[in-house]
Length: 536
Image (cartoon, rainbow, N blue to C red):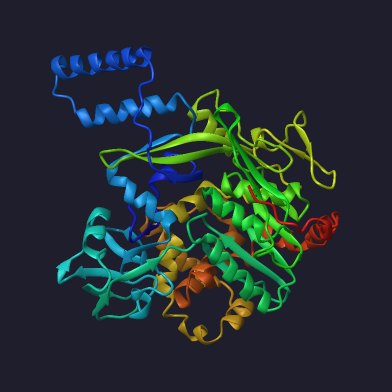
Protein backbone atom coordinates (compact mmCIF):
# COMPACT_ATOMS: atom_id res chain seq x y z
CA UNK A 1 0.00 0.00 0.00
CA UNK A 2 1.53 3.30 -1.02
CA UNK A 3 1.13 6.76 0.44
CA UNK A 4 -0.84 9.03 -1.90
CA UNK A 5 -1.29 12.74 -2.33
CA UNK A 6 -4.84 14.01 -2.65
CA UNK A 7 -4.20 15.05 -6.21
CA UNK A 8 -2.46 11.85 -7.28
CA UNK A 9 -3.27 8.24 -8.08
CA UNK A 10 0.37 7.50 -7.35
CA UNK A 11 3.68 8.55 -8.68
CA UNK A 12 2.84 7.46 -12.20
CA UNK A 13 6.00 8.56 -13.92
CA UNK A 14 8.25 7.22 -11.18
CA UNK A 15 6.66 3.80 -11.69
CA UNK A 16 7.52 4.02 -15.37
CA UNK A 17 11.10 5.13 -14.87
CA UNK A 18 13.37 7.25 -12.76
CA UNK A 19 12.12 10.79 -13.22
CA UNK A 20 15.40 12.29 -14.30
CA UNK A 21 16.16 15.68 -15.76
CA UNK A 22 13.71 17.20 -18.18
CA UNK A 23 12.35 20.43 -19.59
CA UNK A 24 9.03 21.18 -21.28
CA UNK A 25 8.76 22.24 -24.94
CA UNK A 26 6.05 22.26 -27.57
CA UNK A 27 6.21 20.32 -30.79
CA UNK A 28 7.17 22.84 -33.44
CA UNK A 29 8.16 20.87 -36.51
CA UNK A 30 5.47 19.43 -38.75
CA UNK A 31 7.99 17.88 -41.14
CA UNK A 32 8.03 14.58 -39.27
CA UNK A 33 8.57 12.32 -42.29
CA UNK A 34 11.74 13.53 -44.05
CA UNK A 35 12.23 10.55 -46.34
CA UNK A 36 10.40 7.94 -48.37
CA UNK A 37 12.16 5.29 -46.24
CA UNK A 38 10.41 6.53 -43.08
CA UNK A 39 7.10 6.66 -44.93
CA UNK A 40 7.46 3.05 -46.10
CA UNK A 41 8.22 1.91 -42.56
CA UNK A 42 5.14 3.68 -41.24
CA UNK A 43 3.06 2.11 -44.01
CA UNK A 44 4.32 -1.29 -42.86
CA UNK A 45 3.05 -0.59 -39.37
CA UNK A 46 -0.25 0.68 -40.77
CA UNK A 47 -0.63 -2.56 -42.72
CA UNK A 48 -0.04 -4.71 -39.63
CA UNK A 49 -2.47 -2.61 -37.62
CA UNK A 50 -5.14 -2.98 -40.34
CA UNK A 51 -4.72 -6.78 -40.48
CA UNK A 52 -4.90 -7.15 -36.69
CA UNK A 53 -7.92 -4.88 -36.52
CA UNK A 54 -9.66 -6.74 -39.35
CA UNK A 55 -8.84 -10.41 -38.74
CA UNK A 56 -7.78 -10.99 -35.12
CA UNK A 57 -9.89 -13.65 -33.38
CA UNK A 58 -11.33 -11.07 -30.96
CA UNK A 59 -12.09 -7.39 -31.40
CA UNK A 60 -8.79 -5.76 -30.35
CA UNK A 61 -8.49 -2.79 -28.03
CA UNK A 62 -7.06 -0.33 -30.54
CA UNK A 63 -6.03 2.22 -27.92
CA UNK A 64 -4.10 -0.47 -26.07
CA UNK A 65 -2.43 -1.65 -29.28
CA UNK A 66 -1.26 1.83 -30.26
CA UNK A 67 -0.03 2.66 -26.76
CA UNK A 68 1.83 -0.65 -26.65
CA UNK A 69 3.40 0.06 -30.01
CA UNK A 70 4.59 3.46 -28.81
CA UNK A 71 6.01 1.93 -25.63
CA UNK A 72 7.79 -0.68 -27.74
CA UNK A 73 9.27 1.98 -30.00
CA UNK A 74 10.59 4.01 -27.07
CA UNK A 75 12.00 0.95 -25.29
CA UNK A 76 14.38 0.50 -28.23
CA UNK A 77 15.87 3.94 -27.51
CA UNK A 78 16.74 4.20 -23.81
CA UNK A 79 15.12 3.53 -20.41
CA UNK A 80 14.02 7.11 -19.85
CA UNK A 81 12.16 8.00 -23.03
CA UNK A 82 8.54 7.32 -22.07
CA UNK A 83 4.98 7.76 -23.30
CA UNK A 84 2.52 9.39 -20.89
CA UNK A 85 -1.15 8.61 -21.59
CA UNK A 86 -3.58 11.51 -21.65
CA UNK A 87 -5.22 10.44 -18.38
CA UNK A 88 -1.89 10.67 -16.56
CA UNK A 89 -0.46 13.87 -18.04
CA UNK A 90 -2.08 16.24 -15.54
CA UNK A 91 -0.99 14.15 -12.55
CA UNK A 92 2.58 13.84 -13.75
CA UNK A 93 2.78 17.55 -14.57
CA UNK A 94 1.32 18.61 -11.21
CA UNK A 95 4.12 16.85 -9.36
CA UNK A 96 6.56 19.39 -10.77
CA UNK A 97 4.46 22.52 -11.29
CA UNK A 98 4.28 23.26 -7.59
CA UNK A 99 0.55 23.37 -6.81
CA UNK A 100 -2.93 21.90 -7.33
CA UNK A 101 -6.43 22.69 -6.08
CA UNK A 102 -8.10 20.53 -3.44
CA UNK A 103 -8.41 20.03 0.33
CA UNK A 104 -4.71 19.36 0.95
CA UNK A 105 -4.04 15.96 2.49
CA UNK A 106 -1.70 13.05 2.02
CA UNK A 107 -3.76 9.88 2.30
CA UNK A 108 -3.85 6.13 2.07
CA UNK A 109 -6.76 3.72 1.82
CA UNK A 110 -6.26 1.50 4.85
CA UNK A 111 -8.57 -1.49 5.26
CA UNK A 112 -10.97 0.18 2.77
CA UNK A 113 -11.05 3.36 4.87
CA UNK A 114 -9.78 6.70 3.58
CA UNK A 115 -7.13 7.62 6.14
CA UNK A 116 -5.21 10.90 6.47
CA UNK A 117 -1.45 10.41 6.62
CA UNK A 118 -0.81 14.11 7.05
CA UNK A 119 -2.53 17.41 6.27
CA UNK A 120 -0.38 19.48 3.92
CA UNK A 121 1.18 22.39 5.78
CA UNK A 122 -0.64 25.64 5.06
CA UNK A 123 -3.58 23.87 3.40
CA UNK A 124 -7.31 24.06 4.19
CA UNK A 125 -7.42 20.67 5.93
CA UNK A 126 -4.75 21.74 8.38
CA UNK A 127 -6.67 24.99 8.93
CA UNK A 128 -9.80 23.13 10.10
CA UNK A 129 -7.82 20.84 12.42
CA UNK A 130 -7.52 17.62 10.40
CA UNK A 131 -4.89 15.36 12.03
CA UNK A 132 -2.77 12.39 10.92
CA UNK A 133 -4.76 9.20 11.43
CA UNK A 134 -8.16 10.82 10.95
CA UNK A 135 -10.51 8.59 8.98
CA UNK A 136 -12.82 10.19 6.43
CA UNK A 137 -15.87 7.97 6.75
CA UNK A 138 -18.35 10.11 4.79
CA UNK A 139 -18.15 12.66 1.99
CA UNK A 140 -21.24 14.85 1.59
CA UNK A 141 -23.15 12.41 3.86
CA UNK A 142 -22.33 9.42 1.62
CA UNK A 143 -20.29 6.54 3.03
CA UNK A 144 -16.64 6.55 1.95
CA UNK A 145 -16.06 2.93 3.00
CA UNK A 146 -14.42 1.02 0.16
CA UNK A 147 -13.72 4.21 -1.78
CA UNK A 148 -11.24 3.94 -4.66
CA UNK A 149 -8.36 6.31 -5.33
CA UNK A 150 -10.12 7.55 -8.48
CA UNK A 151 -13.22 8.42 -6.44
CA UNK A 152 -11.11 10.27 -3.87
CA UNK A 153 -9.84 12.48 -6.68
CA UNK A 154 -13.33 13.10 -8.04
CA UNK A 155 -14.95 13.86 -4.70
CA UNK A 156 -12.28 15.80 -2.83
CA UNK A 157 -10.44 17.66 -5.54
CA UNK A 158 -12.08 20.77 -6.96
CA UNK A 159 -11.74 24.45 -7.82
CA UNK A 160 -10.44 26.91 -5.27
CA UNK A 161 -13.27 28.38 -3.17
CA UNK A 162 -15.67 25.43 -3.44
CA UNK A 163 -16.66 23.55 -0.29
CA UNK A 164 -16.95 19.90 0.66
CA UNK A 165 -18.38 18.37 3.85
CA UNK A 166 -16.58 15.37 5.32
CA UNK A 167 -17.32 13.23 8.36
CA UNK A 168 -14.28 12.37 10.48
CA UNK A 169 -13.73 9.44 12.82
CA UNK A 170 -10.76 10.25 15.03
CA UNK A 171 -8.94 7.41 16.82
CA UNK A 172 -9.52 7.56 20.57
CA UNK A 173 -12.76 9.52 20.23
CA UNK A 174 -16.08 7.62 20.39
CA UNK A 175 -18.09 10.10 18.32
CA UNK A 176 -17.51 11.15 14.72
CA UNK A 177 -17.79 14.80 13.71
CA UNK A 178 -18.33 16.85 10.56
CA UNK A 179 -16.15 19.57 9.06
CA UNK A 180 -16.66 21.73 5.99
CA UNK A 181 -13.43 22.30 4.08
CA UNK A 182 -13.03 25.12 1.56
CA UNK A 183 -10.81 23.95 -1.27
CA UNK A 184 -7.78 26.06 -2.06
CA UNK A 185 -4.54 26.10 -4.03
CA UNK A 186 -2.30 23.53 -2.37
CA UNK A 187 1.48 23.79 -2.61
CA UNK A 188 3.49 20.70 -3.54
CA UNK A 189 6.66 20.99 -1.53
CA UNK A 190 10.12 19.97 -2.68
CA UNK A 191 11.73 20.66 0.70
CA UNK A 192 10.24 17.82 2.71
CA UNK A 193 11.86 18.85 5.97
CA UNK A 194 14.43 21.37 7.24
CA UNK A 195 15.61 22.01 10.77
CA UNK A 196 18.62 22.43 13.03
CA UNK A 197 19.96 19.16 14.40
CA UNK A 198 19.55 19.14 18.18
CA UNK A 199 22.52 20.35 20.21
CA UNK A 200 24.56 21.38 17.17
CA UNK A 201 25.21 24.17 14.68
CA UNK A 202 24.41 21.81 11.80
CA UNK A 203 21.34 22.26 9.67
CA UNK A 204 19.51 19.47 7.86
CA UNK A 205 17.52 19.77 4.61
CA UNK A 206 15.68 16.85 2.98
CA UNK A 207 14.87 17.54 -0.67
CA UNK A 208 12.27 15.27 -2.24
CA UNK A 209 12.19 16.43 -5.89
CA UNK A 210 13.32 19.13 -8.30
CA UNK A 211 10.05 20.87 -9.17
CA UNK A 212 9.12 24.34 -10.38
CA UNK A 213 9.41 25.92 -6.91
CA UNK A 214 12.40 23.97 -5.57
CA UNK A 215 14.93 26.81 -5.76
CA UNK A 216 12.76 29.32 -3.92
CA UNK A 217 11.77 26.74 -1.29
CA UNK A 218 15.40 25.87 -0.65
CA UNK A 219 16.34 29.54 -0.53
CA UNK A 220 13.73 30.11 2.19
CA UNK A 221 14.88 27.03 4.15
CA UNK A 222 18.56 28.01 4.01
CA UNK A 223 17.85 31.57 5.14
CA UNK A 224 15.79 30.31 8.07
CA UNK A 225 18.52 27.90 9.14
CA UNK A 226 21.22 30.54 8.76
CA UNK A 227 19.13 32.88 10.94
CA UNK A 228 19.17 30.13 13.60
CA UNK A 229 22.97 30.07 13.54
CA UNK A 230 23.67 27.28 11.05
CA UNK A 231 27.42 26.83 10.51
CA UNK A 232 27.31 23.58 8.48
CA UNK A 233 24.72 21.72 6.40
CA UNK A 234 23.66 18.16 5.69
CA UNK A 235 21.87 18.20 2.33
CA UNK A 236 19.89 14.97 1.96
CA UNK A 237 19.26 13.89 -1.65
CA UNK A 238 18.66 10.21 -0.89
CA UNK A 239 15.85 8.72 -3.00
CA UNK A 240 15.47 12.03 -4.86
CA UNK A 241 14.83 10.86 -8.42
CA UNK A 242 15.19 14.21 -10.17
CA UNK A 243 13.11 16.78 -11.99
CA UNK A 244 13.77 20.02 -13.86
CA UNK A 245 17.27 20.68 -15.19
CA UNK A 246 17.14 24.42 -14.50
CA UNK A 247 16.18 23.73 -10.88
CA UNK A 248 19.17 21.43 -10.45
CA UNK A 249 21.37 24.24 -11.74
CA UNK A 250 19.76 26.83 -9.44
CA UNK A 251 20.12 24.56 -6.41
CA UNK A 252 23.82 23.93 -7.08
CA UNK A 253 24.27 27.65 -7.75
CA UNK A 254 23.38 28.43 -4.13
CA UNK A 255 26.49 26.64 -2.88
CA UNK A 256 29.04 27.47 -5.60
CA UNK A 257 30.64 30.90 -6.14
CA UNK A 258 30.12 32.62 -9.49
CA UNK A 259 31.87 31.74 -12.72
CA UNK A 260 32.04 27.97 -12.33
CA UNK A 261 30.68 25.48 -14.83
CA UNK A 262 28.02 23.50 -12.95
CA UNK A 263 26.79 21.22 -15.73
CA UNK A 264 26.73 21.00 -19.52
CA UNK A 265 24.67 19.04 -22.01
CA UNK A 266 25.53 17.51 -25.37
CA UNK A 267 22.87 16.47 -27.85
CA UNK A 268 22.58 15.42 -31.47
CA UNK A 269 25.25 16.79 -33.82
CA UNK A 270 27.23 18.19 -30.88
CA UNK A 271 24.63 20.79 -29.91
CA UNK A 272 24.37 21.58 -26.23
CA UNK A 273 24.31 24.11 -23.39
CA UNK A 274 26.65 25.14 -20.60
CA UNK A 275 25.43 26.35 -17.20
CA UNK A 276 27.70 28.59 -15.11
CA UNK A 277 27.25 29.60 -11.49
CA UNK A 278 26.24 33.15 -10.62
CA UNK A 279 26.62 35.30 -7.52
CA UNK A 280 22.88 35.97 -7.25
CA UNK A 281 21.98 33.62 -4.38
CA UNK A 282 25.31 32.18 -3.30
CA UNK A 283 25.26 31.43 0.42
CA UNK A 284 28.19 31.53 2.85
CA UNK A 285 30.78 28.85 2.13
CA UNK A 286 30.00 26.76 5.21
CA UNK A 287 30.85 23.02 5.13
CA UNK A 288 28.34 20.89 3.23
CA UNK A 289 27.82 17.12 3.26
CA UNK A 290 25.57 15.80 0.47
CA UNK A 291 23.87 12.46 1.17
CA UNK A 292 23.09 10.25 -1.84
CA UNK A 293 22.06 6.64 -2.35
CA UNK A 294 21.17 4.26 -5.17
CA UNK A 295 17.86 6.11 -5.60
CA UNK A 296 19.45 9.54 -6.12
CA UNK A 297 19.14 10.21 -9.83
CA UNK A 298 19.59 12.78 -12.54
CA UNK A 299 18.99 16.27 -11.11
CA UNK A 300 20.27 14.98 -7.75
CA UNK A 301 23.37 13.71 -9.51
CA UNK A 302 23.89 17.08 -11.20
CA UNK A 303 23.98 18.79 -7.80
CA UNK A 304 26.12 16.12 -6.12
CA UNK A 305 28.45 15.98 -9.12
CA UNK A 306 28.95 19.76 -9.19
CA UNK A 307 29.66 19.97 -5.45
CA UNK A 308 32.11 17.08 -5.74
CA UNK A 309 33.87 18.18 -8.94
CA UNK A 310 34.28 21.74 -7.68
CA UNK A 311 35.45 20.59 -4.22
CA UNK A 312 32.67 22.54 -2.54
CA UNK A 313 31.83 19.81 -0.02
CA UNK A 314 31.79 16.11 0.79
CA UNK A 315 29.52 13.63 -1.02
CA UNK A 316 28.65 10.68 1.20
CA UNK A 317 26.54 7.51 0.98
CA UNK A 318 26.04 5.00 -1.82
CA UNK A 319 26.81 5.26 -5.53
CA UNK A 320 23.92 7.11 -7.14
CA UNK A 321 21.53 5.71 -9.73
CA UNK A 322 23.52 6.74 -12.81
CA UNK A 323 21.17 8.66 -15.09
CA UNK A 324 22.87 11.16 -17.36
CA UNK A 325 20.13 11.74 -19.93
CA UNK A 326 17.97 14.83 -20.46
CA UNK A 327 14.34 14.60 -21.63
CA UNK A 328 12.06 17.09 -23.35
CA UNK A 329 8.32 16.70 -22.86
CA UNK A 330 6.35 16.99 -26.09
CA UNK A 331 2.59 17.39 -26.03
CA UNK A 332 0.81 15.19 -28.57
CA UNK A 333 -2.34 16.20 -30.42
CA UNK A 334 -4.65 13.93 -28.40
CA UNK A 335 -3.45 15.38 -25.07
CA UNK A 336 -0.98 12.62 -24.25
CA UNK A 337 2.73 13.38 -24.04
CA UNK A 338 6.10 12.04 -25.08
CA UNK A 339 9.07 12.49 -22.79
CA UNK A 340 11.99 12.03 -25.17
CA UNK A 341 15.73 11.94 -24.48
CA UNK A 342 17.38 14.77 -26.43
CA UNK A 343 20.79 15.12 -24.76
CA UNK A 344 23.33 13.74 -22.30
CA UNK A 345 24.57 15.82 -19.42
CA UNK A 346 28.08 16.02 -17.98
CA UNK A 347 29.49 17.16 -14.63
CA UNK A 348 32.08 19.96 -14.50
CA UNK A 349 35.01 17.53 -14.77
CA UNK A 350 33.51 16.01 -17.92
CA UNK A 351 31.94 12.92 -16.37
CA UNK A 352 28.99 11.26 -18.08
CA UNK A 353 27.39 9.42 -15.20
CA UNK A 354 24.86 7.43 -17.28
CA UNK A 355 25.05 3.68 -16.67
CA UNK A 356 24.95 1.25 -19.56
CA UNK A 357 21.49 -0.07 -20.47
CA UNK A 358 22.66 -2.54 -23.13
CA UNK A 359 21.41 -5.55 -21.14
CA UNK A 360 17.81 -4.30 -21.19
CA UNK A 361 15.45 -2.57 -18.78
CA UNK A 362 15.16 -5.37 -16.20
CA UNK A 363 18.91 -5.58 -15.57
CA UNK A 364 19.23 -1.79 -15.80
CA UNK A 365 16.88 -1.21 -12.88
CA UNK A 366 17.88 -4.28 -10.87
CA UNK A 367 21.56 -3.41 -10.99
CA UNK A 368 20.87 0.12 -9.80
CA UNK A 369 20.07 -1.18 -6.31
CA UNK A 370 22.48 -4.13 -6.20
CA UNK A 371 25.39 -3.40 -3.88
CA UNK A 372 27.47 -6.27 -5.26
CA UNK A 373 27.36 -4.54 -8.65
CA UNK A 374 27.48 -0.88 -7.56
CA UNK A 375 29.78 -0.82 -4.54
CA UNK A 376 33.09 -0.53 -6.44
CA UNK A 377 33.82 2.53 -8.60
CA UNK A 378 34.97 2.06 -12.18
CA UNK A 379 38.67 2.84 -11.78
CA UNK A 380 39.14 2.93 -15.56
CA UNK A 381 37.14 6.16 -15.82
CA UNK A 382 39.06 8.63 -13.69
CA UNK A 383 38.57 12.37 -13.71
CA UNK A 384 40.04 15.24 -11.71
CA UNK A 385 38.20 17.74 -9.56
CA UNK A 386 39.07 21.42 -9.66
CA UNK A 387 41.61 20.86 -6.86
CA UNK A 388 42.96 17.68 -8.46
CA UNK A 389 41.18 14.99 -6.46
CA UNK A 390 40.34 11.79 -8.37
CA UNK A 391 36.64 11.09 -9.05
CA UNK A 392 35.01 8.38 -11.13
CA UNK A 393 32.49 8.40 -13.98
CA UNK A 394 30.42 6.04 -16.07
CA UNK A 395 28.08 4.65 -13.43
CA UNK A 396 26.58 7.31 -11.21
CA UNK A 397 28.25 9.58 -8.68
CA UNK A 398 30.71 7.62 -6.52
CA UNK A 399 30.72 9.23 -3.05
CA UNK A 400 33.89 10.58 -1.48
CA UNK A 401 32.96 8.41 1.50
CA UNK A 402 31.04 5.19 0.87
CA UNK A 403 28.49 4.39 3.59
CA UNK A 404 25.88 1.75 2.81
CA UNK A 405 22.27 2.24 3.87
CA UNK A 406 20.77 0.19 6.66
CA UNK A 407 19.55 -3.18 5.41
CA UNK A 408 16.39 -4.27 7.19
CA UNK A 409 14.75 -7.70 7.27
CA UNK A 410 11.78 -8.73 5.15
CA UNK A 411 9.74 -8.78 8.34
CA UNK A 412 10.42 -5.09 9.02
CA UNK A 413 9.82 -4.27 5.37
CA UNK A 414 6.41 -5.89 5.66
CA UNK A 415 5.65 -3.88 8.80
CA UNK A 416 6.37 -0.72 6.83
CA UNK A 417 4.56 -1.84 3.69
CA UNK A 418 1.39 -2.75 5.57
CA UNK A 419 1.44 0.54 7.49
CA UNK A 420 1.76 -1.05 10.94
CA UNK A 421 3.84 1.86 12.24
CA UNK A 422 1.27 4.37 11.03
CA UNK A 423 -1.50 2.33 12.66
CA UNK A 424 0.45 2.34 15.92
CA UNK A 425 0.90 6.11 15.85
CA UNK A 426 -2.73 6.67 14.96
CA UNK A 427 -4.04 4.34 17.64
CA UNK A 428 -1.84 5.51 20.51
CA UNK A 429 -1.35 9.25 19.96
CA UNK A 430 -4.20 10.08 22.33
CA UNK A 431 -2.68 7.85 25.00
CA UNK A 432 0.56 9.85 24.96
CA UNK A 433 -1.04 13.24 24.36
CA UNK A 434 0.57 14.64 27.54
CA UNK A 435 3.88 14.88 25.66
CA UNK A 436 2.44 17.27 23.08
CA UNK A 437 3.32 20.39 25.07
CA UNK A 438 7.09 19.82 24.84
CA UNK A 439 8.66 18.21 21.78
CA UNK A 440 12.18 18.74 23.12
CA UNK A 441 11.35 16.70 26.19
CA UNK A 442 9.66 14.05 24.03
CA UNK A 443 12.75 13.82 21.83
CA UNK A 444 15.13 13.49 24.78
CA UNK A 445 13.14 11.40 27.26
CA UNK A 446 10.39 9.41 25.54
CA UNK A 447 11.26 5.75 25.07
CA UNK A 448 9.40 2.74 23.75
CA UNK A 449 8.35 0.40 26.57
CA UNK A 450 7.76 -3.35 26.54
CA UNK A 451 4.02 -2.66 26.84
CA UNK A 452 4.12 -0.54 23.67
CA UNK A 453 6.02 -3.30 21.88
CA UNK A 454 3.35 -5.83 22.86
CA UNK A 455 0.66 -3.46 21.60
CA UNK A 456 2.65 -3.02 18.39
CA UNK A 457 2.87 -6.80 17.92
CA UNK A 458 -0.90 -7.05 18.35
CA UNK A 459 -1.42 -4.47 15.60
CA UNK A 460 0.94 -6.44 13.36
CA UNK A 461 -1.06 -9.62 14.00
CA UNK A 462 -4.24 -7.83 12.94
CA UNK A 463 -2.46 -7.14 9.64
CA UNK A 464 -1.75 -10.89 9.43
CA UNK A 465 1.99 -10.50 9.93
CA UNK A 466 3.52 -13.42 11.81
CA UNK A 467 5.89 -12.24 14.53
CA UNK A 468 9.56 -13.11 14.06
CA UNK A 469 11.77 -13.03 17.16
CA UNK A 470 14.95 -13.22 15.10
CA UNK A 471 13.98 -10.41 12.73
CA UNK A 472 12.63 -8.22 15.53
CA UNK A 473 15.83 -8.63 17.52
CA UNK A 474 17.94 -7.70 14.48
CA UNK A 475 15.92 -4.56 13.72
CA UNK A 476 14.81 -3.70 17.26
CA UNK A 477 16.47 -0.28 17.42
CA UNK A 478 15.12 0.69 14.00
CA UNK A 479 11.61 -0.55 14.80
CA UNK A 480 11.54 1.43 18.06
CA UNK A 481 12.82 4.51 16.22
CA UNK A 482 9.99 4.31 13.67
CA UNK A 483 7.42 3.75 16.42
CA UNK A 484 8.59 6.92 18.17
CA UNK A 485 8.76 8.84 14.89
CA UNK A 486 5.17 7.91 14.00
CA UNK A 487 3.98 9.03 17.41
CA UNK A 488 5.73 12.35 16.75
CA UNK A 489 3.95 12.65 13.40
CA UNK A 490 0.56 12.12 15.04
CA UNK A 491 1.29 14.36 18.03
CA UNK A 492 2.78 17.16 15.90
CA UNK A 493 3.38 16.81 12.14
CA UNK A 494 5.63 15.28 9.48
CA UNK A 495 8.41 17.78 10.24
CA UNK A 496 8.67 16.34 13.74
CA UNK A 497 8.51 12.81 12.31
CA UNK A 498 11.73 13.50 10.42
CA UNK A 499 13.38 15.11 13.43
CA UNK A 500 12.96 11.85 15.33
CA UNK A 501 13.71 9.68 12.30
CA UNK A 502 17.11 11.23 11.55
CA UNK A 503 18.13 11.14 15.23
CA UNK A 504 18.74 7.44 14.72
CA UNK A 505 19.96 7.68 11.12
CA UNK A 506 23.46 6.22 11.01
CA UNK A 507 24.31 8.06 7.79
CA UNK A 508 23.28 11.42 9.24
CA UNK A 509 25.32 10.75 12.36
CA UNK A 510 28.31 9.82 10.20
CA UNK A 511 27.81 13.00 8.17
CA UNK A 512 28.07 15.05 11.37
CA UNK A 513 31.33 13.28 12.24
CA UNK A 514 32.70 13.94 8.74
CA UNK A 515 31.89 17.66 8.73
CA UNK A 516 35.58 18.58 9.41
CA UNK A 517 36.52 16.68 6.22
CA UNK A 518 33.82 18.57 4.31
CA UNK A 519 35.32 21.79 5.64
CA UNK A 520 38.81 20.72 4.53
CA UNK A 521 37.63 19.93 1.00
CA UNK A 522 35.77 23.22 0.81
CA UNK A 523 39.01 25.10 1.44
CA UNK A 524 41.04 23.38 -1.30
CA UNK A 525 40.23 26.15 -3.77
CA UNK A 526 40.73 29.89 -3.45
CA UNK A 527 37.23 31.00 -4.40
CA UNK A 528 38.19 34.67 -4.47
CA UNK A 529 39.54 34.22 -7.99
CA UNK A 530 36.26 32.82 -9.31
CA UNK A 531 33.47 35.30 -8.73
CA UNK A 532 32.94 36.70 -12.21
CA UNK A 533 29.59 35.74 -13.70
CA UNK A 534 29.44 34.11 -17.12
CA UNK A 535 26.46 33.87 -19.45
CA UNK A 536 25.70 32.03 -22.66
